[in-house]
Length: 117
Length: 110
Image 1 (tube, one colour):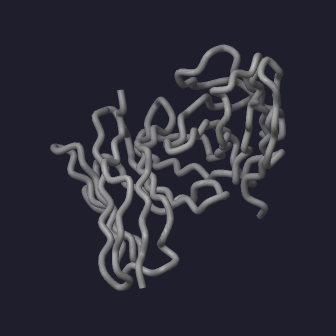
Image 2: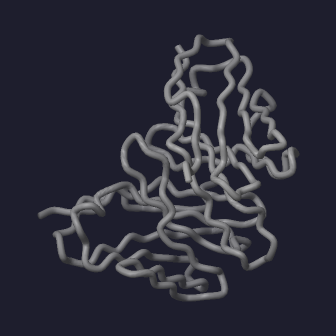
């Protein structure tokens, strides 16, 4: 089992450009979440996808958008990049919670390090 | 507003002793809590979780305690080993995904 895989591992973009990050979930997982981790901070929830739809969203602007494909893989798109978007972007997969007390541990990929210059 | 707080940026513990990492939260709507461990250049790795209806969960050397009235949880690692040196994140889980603290850097000294 390859676990959660993300590509690319590192990326450098210029302010104003657009970027697409990719994620393949762990086998058997149908839910993908994206997180942004700035230096010295904990991961911050961007959004979650299930059944190819955005189900939940954190406090991020519309410049951040995503997509989930029928094979459960996902993309994160960021438009009009700002210097402040430089961060580690983490993808996490999990089975969709089907009970209120179901502890849904998320399995994380190694992340994509995005640098905006 | 930081809903999950880890007030100790770092913690140094001697090998073989107990490591205690603390976490406070303000959101009463969390359904469960999780602890993750992160090495440099890797994604967070799930360690242990606890439902909001429990007060203790144990898995090998790792035990998580939850005090709902104090909105506090802690992770105990006994005995501490050199491979435990990493950044530990506490997270609350619920309808709004996972909310993480800023992490505590645990350093195990020989």
